Length: 240
Ligand code: URA
Image 1 (cartoon, rainbow, N blue to C red):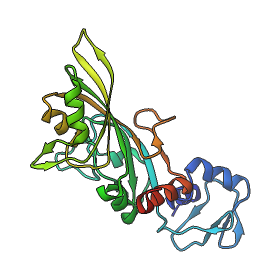
Image 2: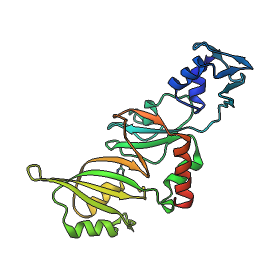
Image 3: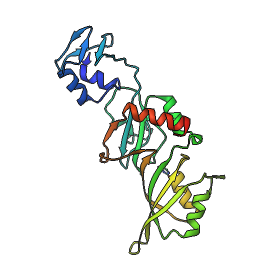
Image 4: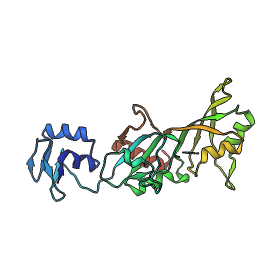
């Protein structure tokens, strides 16, 4: 038996807070009976209707997390390190869409929708990912060009990238660089800079397609809206 608001939230219909509001606002029926009590307990055989929609356990869920440093992008780590799914309050079996390194921060999607995950990750679908890298040294014009046109990492050339230097700090001899890529190869950004002899000191992913980290501090997350999910599907399938 689980609390009604938890079951609604876990179904992917809405957040737990919104589920509580819906219960109090007389929008939730269990087995045909109006329930307004927040602690009401239900089990998996109960028929739950929220705002006229039947809730099932199999609903697809989509989370946007601001990943902190020190978490593995996985559902389990053999070495016992913390994993990104620890940060999300759900009993559904979600997993990260692609990977950010242990020391990389920023936007990471998690879902239980395999088709969605594959569409987001496949390079042919050209879903842009924007990274901000703090690198050692000055990035010269020829290096920007090389990175933009593609550099060879692990024997294979990278696709076109958009590269912009945002800032150079003379004191520390470091640069802040924005780089947009649509592939997601292992340690891709770090290896790309390595290919032009710059070490990446810090890396953050700030955007995936139109999704940003707006309003989310480190470790915070939110659910994607159905509209956002639809837009991402459209982008991946039709390029718009
Ligand atoms: N590129 C990297 O090198 N690391 C990441 O975490 C993401 C992209």
